[in-house]
Image 1 (tube, one colour):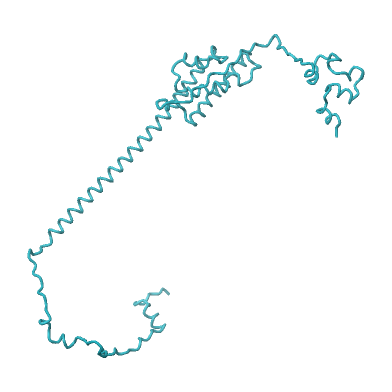
Image 2 (cartoon, one colour):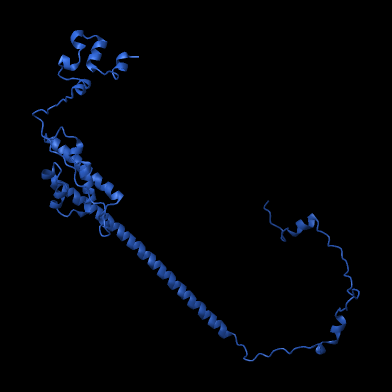
Length: 289
């Protein structure tokens, strides 16, 4: 185990003095002292915390001054019914964000080619907070002055607000064009659906009319007499004489007078040869030799 690495985090006196003692850097009379006693120009964090001092690093004279950044006011998140059409969908928002990112990259390259803002990070040219404001108000921006009021805290507002407004107009045209195409496609599908329902209703009406006409024609073809004579009722006196003799009637407690049916043997089953012969074709098939 490296004693210097293990003991350095546990040091409570002075980090620099601990390393000097471990590696025995000469002269030990001076290097073993803490930063305040040794009057070092850059004391360690332990010595600064003990003396309640801070280190101030001043920017070079050649660097540019940074403007104070203020957080833009967030957009209201309570849209009414009339403002729902002005909100962007997820796909529209992603597409608009890609256009803003391209604008930020082009602005950064343009400024670097001019030799300005070389030390600025990429996010300073168009921060994510300003992009959020633009995406929330993308379809509400109607003029350059309106855009400048929304991004008044942007560092490059005066110099490049016109370029940003051109990008906003391009995004608006793209979004509205896609929405018009989608609306026309929905309207065409609705018209086709209505036409299909109307045609189906007309076909069903024609089918019902044809069925009614056929039923009327069928009823007219049947020439039935107006007064159909009913058959006369037969009584027991009008029955033929042989009916009484043929009927098997018996009184109560009388023996059964029904005759027994004769028993017949079941028909014999066909042999396999006869069965195969029945399924054989009646004609003689012609065989090519």
